[in-house]
Image (cartoon, rainbow, N blue to C red; front, side):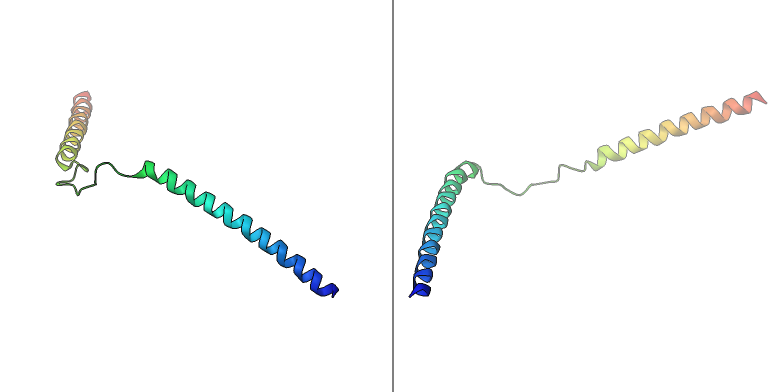
Length: 85
Protein backbone atom coordinates (compact mmCIF):
# COMPACT_ATOMS: atom_id res chain seq x y z
CA UNK A 1 0.00 0.00 0.00
CA UNK A 2 2.89 2.38 0.78
CA UNK A 3 4.47 1.74 -2.63
CA UNK A 4 1.15 2.57 -4.34
CA UNK A 5 0.92 5.92 -2.52
CA UNK A 6 4.50 6.78 -3.54
CA UNK A 7 3.70 5.96 -7.17
CA UNK A 8 0.47 8.02 -7.00
CA UNK A 9 2.36 11.04 -5.63
CA UNK A 10 5.03 10.63 -8.35
CA UNK A 11 2.32 10.46 -11.04
CA UNK A 12 0.61 13.58 -9.69
CA UNK A 13 3.95 15.41 -9.63
CA UNK A 14 4.66 14.31 -13.20
CA UNK A 15 1.21 15.46 -14.34
CA UNK A 16 1.70 18.87 -12.70
CA UNK A 17 5.15 19.23 -14.30
CA UNK A 18 3.78 18.19 -17.70
CA UNK A 19 0.91 20.69 -17.39
CA UNK A 20 3.34 23.50 -16.50
CA UNK A 21 5.66 22.57 -19.39
CA UNK A 22 2.73 22.43 -21.81
CA UNK A 23 1.54 25.88 -20.66
CA UNK A 24 5.06 27.26 -21.13
CA UNK A 25 5.23 25.73 -24.60
CA UNK A 26 1.92 27.26 -25.62
CA UNK A 27 3.01 30.64 -24.26
CA UNK A 28 6.28 30.48 -26.20
CA UNK A 29 4.49 29.41 -29.37
CA UNK A 30 1.97 32.25 -29.05
CA UNK A 31 4.84 34.70 -28.54
CA UNK A 32 6.65 33.36 -31.60
CA UNK A 33 3.50 33.72 -33.71
CA UNK A 34 3.03 37.27 -32.42
CA UNK A 35 6.63 38.21 -33.26
CA UNK A 36 6.57 36.56 -36.69
CA UNK A 37 4.16 39.21 -37.88
CA UNK A 38 7.06 41.68 -37.88
CA UNK A 39 9.07 39.41 -40.17
CA UNK A 40 6.49 39.26 -42.94
CA UNK A 41 7.99 40.69 -46.16
CA UNK A 42 6.20 43.64 -47.69
CA UNK A 43 7.87 43.24 -51.08
CA UNK A 44 8.65 39.81 -52.43
CA UNK A 45 12.34 39.32 -53.30
CA UNK A 46 13.25 38.94 -56.95
CA UNK A 47 16.32 37.75 -58.77
CA UNK A 48 18.78 40.40 -59.88
CA UNK A 49 18.85 41.31 -63.55
CA UNK A 50 22.61 41.81 -63.49
CA UNK A 51 25.30 41.63 -60.85
CA UNK A 52 26.12 44.81 -58.98
CA UNK A 53 29.40 43.56 -57.58
CA UNK A 54 32.19 43.07 -58.42
CA UNK A 55 32.33 46.02 -60.77
CA UNK A 56 34.84 44.51 -63.16
CA UNK A 57 35.32 47.50 -65.47
CA UNK A 58 35.90 49.87 -62.56
CA UNK A 59 38.24 47.39 -60.92
CA UNK A 60 40.28 46.92 -64.11
CA UNK A 61 40.58 50.69 -64.57
CA UNK A 62 41.77 51.11 -60.99
CA UNK A 63 44.37 48.37 -61.40
CA UNK A 64 45.56 49.84 -64.72
CA UNK A 65 45.83 53.30 -63.14
CA UNK A 66 47.72 51.96 -60.15
CA UNK A 67 50.14 50.05 -62.38
CA UNK A 68 50.63 53.15 -64.54
CA UNK A 69 51.45 55.25 -61.49
CA UNK A 70 53.92 52.59 -60.32
CA UNK A 71 55.53 52.49 -63.78
CA UNK A 72 55.84 56.30 -63.85
CA UNK A 73 57.40 56.37 -60.38
CA UNK A 74 59.78 53.54 -61.33
CA UNK A 75 60.81 55.35 -64.55
CA UNK A 76 61.43 58.58 -62.67
CA UNK A 77 63.58 56.75 -60.13
CA UNK A 78 65.47 54.95 -62.90
CA UNK A 79 66.19 58.14 -64.88
CA UNK A 80 67.07 60.02 -61.71
CA UNK A 81 69.66 57.38 -60.80
CA UNK A 82 70.98 57.26 -64.38
CA UNK A 83 71.46 61.06 -64.46
CA UNK A 84 73.50 61.01 -61.24
CA UNK A 85 76.34 59.00 -62.84
